Image (tube, rainbow, N blue to C red):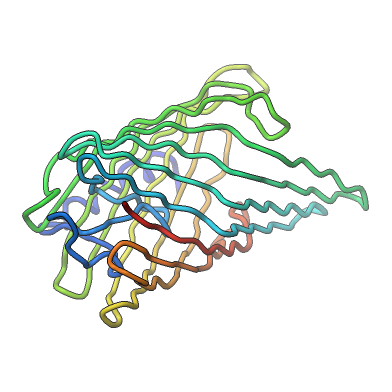
Length: 270
């Protein structure tokens, strides 16, 4: 797929969508006049914000990714990736994203290189454009900034981007989400900035009052990177009205994408 095609993919999706706030099936409880909606576990971010004066923590217990090809094998492992959110207004929240611990291992021709520690920190601001508390559709605008930390796993460069999540409620048990994302990333070779694009579409289904599932397709490409396509799927379980567990898998659909990813986590609000 060409970069231009990837860029117009979200526009095609938006042309078909005509109704409703798509919340994850596990977030169907009404608390403080707005049900809890999370950005995890899928790639597609939520179009809904955290209510004013409340906090929400979305944490990964374990995230593992593996890729092999061309005589090279890479494995990435992260523990405790955190997204800490604070409701600033009825339609806006602030987010701080960071990993408590990361490890990247590369094996090539029998030699192993391992990098580990704390990665970069990302700050995000989500502004809901419509549909936070009513209607069948919702959309948000989310700019972000990645701050280098100077560690082994740091990019050593300031980076940023813009995320546009859209939500559609199909019916009481099913929801649909779309996302377009533009990233400005540092190019180590030229010391300049490259543009990367990402588009995703996800369907969430409430299996029972507490159990939910999702299916997702994600595509990404950039100036110096090949197009990557992945299929993601997982389950969610609502422990309480304000706590949701999740687990799932990511599968690469082409050679450029990582072969396999596994993840699990929890989200809670207070």
